[in-house]
Length: 529
Image (cartoon, rainbow, N blue to C red):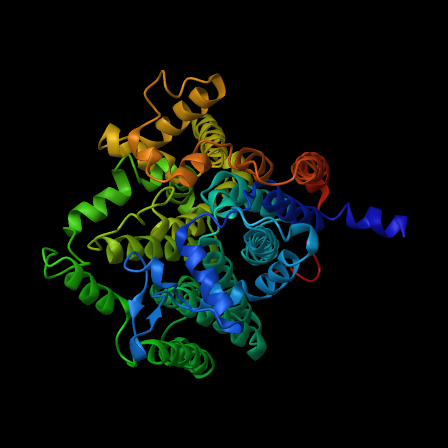
């Protein structure tokens, strides 16, 4: 048994999965992170209990009137289905006698759902991401370090703590790319079915992920194009792909439309038109083109350069990925050419699609959450390319890369320190534009030194909701939040702190062991390309 355990702990993929799981455990706050995810969890609860999708007191802030005058959530059902197993477990645990008197936030059910779901998504993303990078012919060590960079040095880390649908979309898109690429190389019908199903599940999560579905097809097409497949042979591949993938996509699209019909009595509309109609009734001053009322240039350039949302500021690793793709283009394989170009086209597509949306920046979010997943997909190449072609890069590029990676890590760690609305509340007083990342570091220093009031950071808007004030002025990890709320028994707080310290120590140990093994790592026989 000990020899088997030793072999497992010498496998970089096993260590990578342990890292992913421990990271998700350590960074959790016990809260779901956003009101959006809380509403989606309520939909989860509606699936198997008698509770409504939307409580009457949540309207008009959330919910739309649908069939029979009932209130329904406007989101797709994808993330709600993902949380269903954890919700069953969390509800069961919440009814245990030791928790029967605890009803404050963070609720027991939310704690269980956030931990179980985030850990599951993180580990699966590590597996699928490793699989895809190996298929792109990166070594095991390069693939492991690429996944570590994704998990620690991009906004993926923030959304590991704050459970929006982003990381789930990332998992499904990576799965779609990986399994459909396997089909391209092996002709496996099962592989294309699995990949298409993953992308189809994305449609149930956020309908705009149809862009990811298209991107997967473009990726395969570009691989063939860069390999100089043309004419009848290219047409043969396209027809074979559509014969298998198209029915799967149609099935998931039909499921989405049936869910839409169940709620709102229509197969053809989306929630956006209903959202606009209902909000105009509440506020007749809204423009006629609401919620597509932002000038295109404002939303497009804002995603790129606005100091409150810029993808280059919140994800500096993207800069490195683009730089390396440009500098190394002539040296790259057809697969990497195709993936790099596809990921950037997908990013451009998302920025363009949301540019005119009234809430183009994702509203209450760290960075631009609508495009952050496509940013992470592009940034995934940065570290593997850097390691693979280090000898072909000049010294200044290597130094710049180290600076960008270090900067990315520091920014993402800072994103975990406080609940994400903190700077948004502060900007109600401080005004716009505000360099949010710099403000976050100022908040960390002020809170650590007890200078929030002295530095003018304790603003009026922060007190609009007392629970929000408690949450945004606490280190955003479960033990600290439990201690600050003050209603959890002391033994629960102590156990939470002990588990958190143990998890942090275990994560440190696994990372240290992983560092010592990746240099001699061999391709994994089952997950390699």
